[in-house]
Amino acid sequence: MEGADYILGDAFQIDDVDTPVRLERAAGMLSHNERLLLFKLARDHYLGKGHIIDAGSFFGSSTVSLAEGLKANRFFRSISARIAQPIVSYDIGFLPAPPGAKTPITREFGKHSYTWGESFVPILKENIAGHDDVIDLRIGDFLEETWPAKRPIEICFIDLAKTNDLNVRCFRQLFPAFIPGRTLLVQQDFFFDRLPWIKVLMGHVAEHFEWLGQAGPSALYRYRSKIPAEKYAIDPYTDLPVEQRIACHGTATHPGLSPRRELSVALSLCYLLEAGQGPREALDELRSVRERFAGLVAATPKLQSRIERAETQFARGLPRTRPVQTKRPDSRIDFAERVEAKGQVTHAIRELTQAGSLLAHEQELEALYVQWGKLPWAGPHNERVRSEFVGARRAAQRKLNAEKVAAGRLIRPKPAPKVAPPSGWRSWLYRLLGLLRRPAA
Image (cartoon, rainbow, N blue to C red; front, side, top):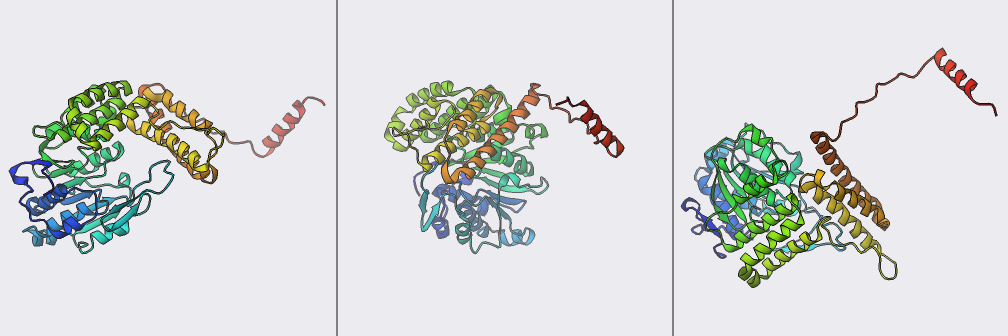
């Protein structure tokens, strides 16, 4: 057992599980405890009353854990007779390279080497080989996926809510299929500090869930009662007033959490404040967090770097990117620097679009457009870089215009009535009148 970074009730204890060898060998980012939790949920708590959703498989460590648990389930034969491929696994199939990266980013995951931007589907398929009989693998953008509410979900693992758009998509597509009193939900990124929207969402529906505990950065819930339709109509991270978002976020604190997880929740609140109230309020809260967790931060370099990263971002204000150096002392800029500079502006526009309401940040958005226009041509990559910028700008403008319409600040023009052009003898008459009206030379 790698530490004891979990708090779970007796029914979900994971320290008594005999670990299948394949769980440990499957490449991926999930911690030891999270793999055991998924294994135990599929082995001991799954009755086949609905499907198992694996939303965000990456290399497949979550998928393998669920499949191994399912096949060790005492009801496996009867379940497989009723449900073909009970596990439905989603992933887009690649990790996008960070904007402005000058060189490829490659990391080792066990025996696998992966470079950001490339497809990892071959690695995923190799990892889950032999479990095809129980896994329905779906590769593509989850924002385009749909799940019918009448198709029940009994276990739901979510590890793809990296943006609020994906977070809301999971909420509106998957949660309506949950079984009251039965469905178990694992929010894998719950204790990751830079994704506050997950905690806001779970606070928005807190009365409909029972918090069962935590394993690593994952939070485990049981679905208790049906969520009313009016709650699904709300995107809590963008639609609720800031005070309500903060209140929803406050439900993320539970008795027994380790100081490390409490720090993650506290840092997440800082990012929420930055998006909702501005960088000054976020910095004030961050100073308080640094004081409250001073001993832990001083003893843990990784946590220290997270504090420093947040401080740097908040101190910059908007746009939240590294300062762009547009000229060298010798007035020359190489192509890689130009691509990075323009990529940073595009990234800042996307972050601003995803952060919340754009009405309050319209001037910052305009400043980003001006900043883009002042940056130099990006060499052989210019067309691709420009295309990415145009896409980000159009998305921002669509959202801003929609907000203006909703606020009554913009009235959509009615299309002008179409007037048929003159034809036949009328056309020749109009041309003749036009010639007669011309002034003499």
